[in-house]
Image 1 (tube, rainbow, N blue to C red):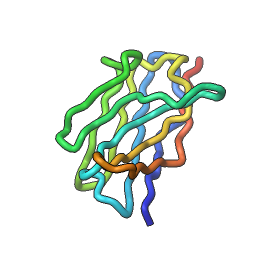
Image 2: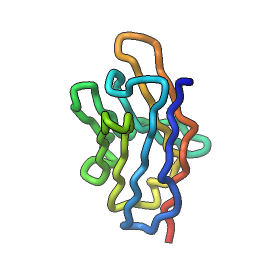
Image 3: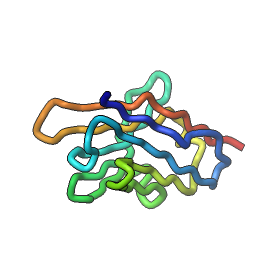
Length: 117
């Protein structure tokens, strides 16, 4: 069964940190471009960070310097380390796997991140 399962969300204080995990099954995630998106109610899902099959990374301007995406081939997983969290980082975070050059894209079920004092 092909699926992405996110974990690690929760409540954090402003200035705090959280690390999200995305475990892939049924695919070799190293062959996919992996990304984290986030969405708040009433708004479009937005790209937060992505990592290519070559390890190159890219970030949205709002999280650059605070978030870091990484991948672990042995665990077939992708991670999002989130530091210096702000209330505006509050959202549902989704893991995405995209097979470059195809229309194949896979989404996880999402994990909620809430940043509040």
